[in-house]
Length: 597
Picture 1: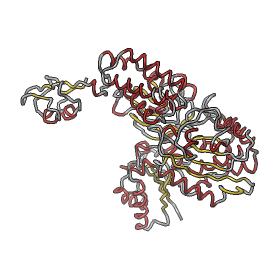
Picture 2 (picture 1 turned 90 degrees about the vertical axis):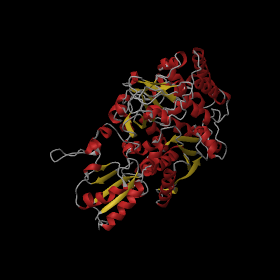
Picture 3 (picture 1 turned 180 degrees about the vertical axis):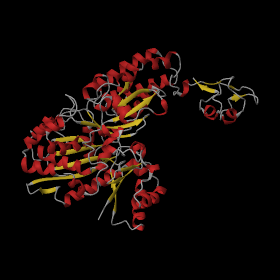
Picture 4 (picture 1 turned 45 degrees about the vertical axis):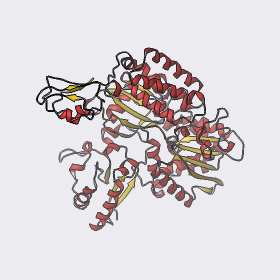
């Protein structure tokens, strides 16, 4: 009889740190110790605390081990699993305790206690490759309910009443989209899952697919019933091999159980799903470009209207929802529209998953009710800024989003509030920046990304973004003018108004938001020829402070350009005409005598 379950994260982050090798070693050590009949190792999805991986939870006691290494396995088996003694040095600090203090559960930690997991409810809880574990968590009960107790119209009305909006970025009401497609009375319709998660720093959809793939399959079948479709496609980027593998396993299991295919639940409803791989083009996250790619053509957007709900995949009515949107649907069906609508704000119901990255202590995945403030997300759940640095800004929505300054830390996060300040929800990437970040360089970085990812179909995006990038390169190299700032703003607004698809229309957002909230940094680059954050290489200036220099000659020996001269035990000097601004001298100085301006 199994008395202990050891859950190990099998998401991409922990897998890249060797979690699957640890799982294999655990099973081997458990067998050697004669515990194979008592202890079961379960490979799960992402727990959320990605910065602490590989992570492991031992149940029933709930001991949370972090940063586990392969060499720790014998000790965990010997001490914890065999003798019942917790390995203290590996315990996550927030779940530490002593004889007098009860060890808090993982749900009571600062990271988890304010979260509300709906889309992520099964991630880190079940084995995503075992359909029985999903069914044990009420899996496919929602599909059974809609097929046997509800009409398609009732399903759509439930979605409308719930207030669920698309989690892919635009925030369009899900029920309304389904209603548009349902009104088209044609024999062939399609349901498409957009899993082409291309934003730098975003990994929400990937984690859901890796940790709970059946939730997406079930939701797609529910959507198919609601609009009258019998075929679904999941468009997922090929760079997500674990997600692709688990999706294919889940589809095979669902077909075997009669939950996909012909006559599901004996109701006469047919629905099946195929996986289509994307080649990593960011533009294919745009719904019409995605459809074009599924059809076997180069991924380029189409003019709208007609919208996909009327004329989509292969010219037939099609609904497209992203992974997170779909992951909410089974729970809405089971618990009701009122339950979902009770969370969040008036215009943004439910929860939102964010991928926290950048200059933050707790890098990872979080799910919070809409309306939670940035301060709560970054400083409470995220643990704040490391190394005592000062918060500067947070980028939401990836290359299509905006940079939000500290003055908006107490802003409740929802679709409308972000739009008001020149940002956007996007798919949920949240990149935190501290005082060492140059906001001009950030705008240049994201614009460089969109220039590379532009499909080139329309002139405003193909040419306009490239001209914008040239202006930013000019500014970061110290050759910009105040006139360039005005020209950039004018060009940004032109691109927004005239680009064909959302990629081009939103590409100027990082530039406009940084110009609005951090214009002083742009002016410092232009007027003073100085980068306040000390990031832009062409504007850097290294100096040796004579009163601190001991004349040890280490800096001169490390300089690859022979730009530093001086005698032993006497202050050295940097020849600015030779300096290549690599920073090797500053890194090697033991006396903090070199400063960067």
